[in-house]
Length: 80
Image (cartoon, rainbow, N blue to C red; front, top):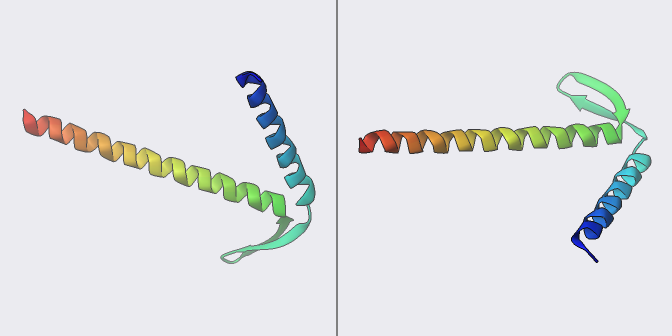
């Protein structure tokens, strides 16, 4: 089996898992955040949590990289 076919099979399996996740989690549930209350599908809550986690991780990575560049720049100027 070639690498291309393996990637295709993995992509199909993940796509099927995503479709099953969506189909099985359409029931509404009550979500509360601070003083707000809403009735939303479970899949929407899962999606919002995933997006929030992704954005948080991205921001942490950007800040860490920015801090590393600043330290490298300070080290460079200290050597001059």
